[in-house]
Image 1: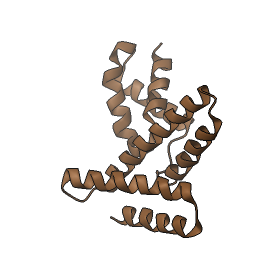
Image 2: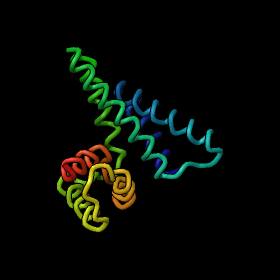
Image 3: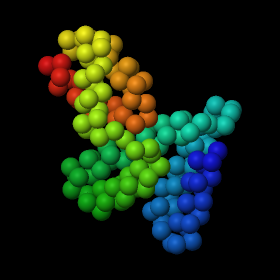
Image 4: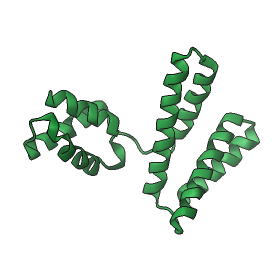
Length: 147
């Protein structure tokens, strides 16, 4: 619950400072967190909170790409700002090199050589990397190494 309290206090600070984008972004985040709490009928863990934030970050990244392609820079900038705000609440993610090392290590341990066996390796990567590994980057590296 400390995690949610921090987000609430940050939202109130954004409201007081007049930062409308931060206020709206944190309001949406709190809404999603409360929705999860209601659906699970229990307090949500920090891990669940991070999972929800990752989903929102992924949505923002996709929106930025779509707006860039459509040449709607003002909307892309807004989404990018929201992305930066949400990223502040995520744990430090593994770097590209750290992710590559993890993928290579798991490939050696499992002795997987074919891309058709990606389903055996990906869950292990996500399990060992925890909240710090980016699944999309890990999947891309895995495909490169198995080609």
